[in-house]
Length: 160
Image (cartoon, rainbow, N blue to C red):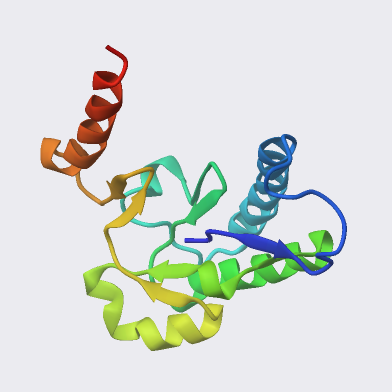
């Protein structure tokens, strides 16, 4: 999961609070998507994550976060690594390793040191929370949503 990208020229330009930031993020992620799509189409050894293979889905972006999906094997991980490096050269936006995590399934954890070394990411664990909700591989249950619902309920109570 790529959570943040940082510019190598931090002195000038947009700040996180800038109203244009979300729009520019979407445009930049679209360029990254096209670069990855082209490489995946050329790289016959790339394997999609089993859950998303039927849809040929390898990426989801939302807010200022990007999720990349693939099967946990060297050629697929290498595609992401090469394309993130190419994207950094083209855009001067680099993945921030301190804020980026590689989350592996339980079955793939035996190879985690090799994958972590290839990508230079930290190892993350599910569930990851986003907007008070856990990002999990199964359906959300009421108990998963309870903290967010309680927070909404407490705010609505204050309206009366």
